[in-house]
Image (cartoon, rainbow, N blue to C red; front, side):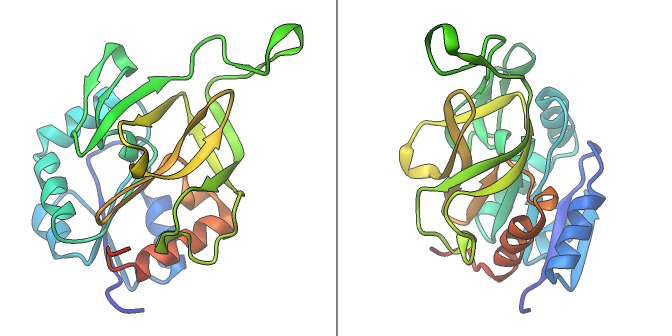
Length: 218
């Protein structure tokens, strides 16, 4: 597979090796888990993962100067954001009392709420937060990253906060859990998912294979 040198940005948060192993399984010839800016910029494609509290994630990213590296990456090559890695791309998150993001996407990241309900009236079902487990993703655009992935396939989610993009044109996929939210967003050569492709078995592997083949155009 051409151009399959991938850098997974390591800013000291979470176990990134499951993402790296999944990329290798998808066919990447080389995967570097690194905080080295020169190594990140030398890669053909870059992954911005994220787990845990967004305040800690964005603080570590900025302390290492990797926020600027992300901006340089998106100007030149395909970037895949995953979970909190997607949320950090927005202007602001309500988590941790309010945290400024990288501002690459207009919009906010919001809490599902303590009283998240499915349905109305006395028969409404109270849903657990965080949203954890498998859920359907409805594709809203025809994009190379959805190649060979059927409509409304299921992916694995773990999150208490969800993105609400400022522009509908940035939404590539939607999910429903008490309310509709963006499961995937796009802009130029950025594709980011709220779900974890590395934990989503066949569909996740296909999405990672699509990322390795994607040249950033659509």
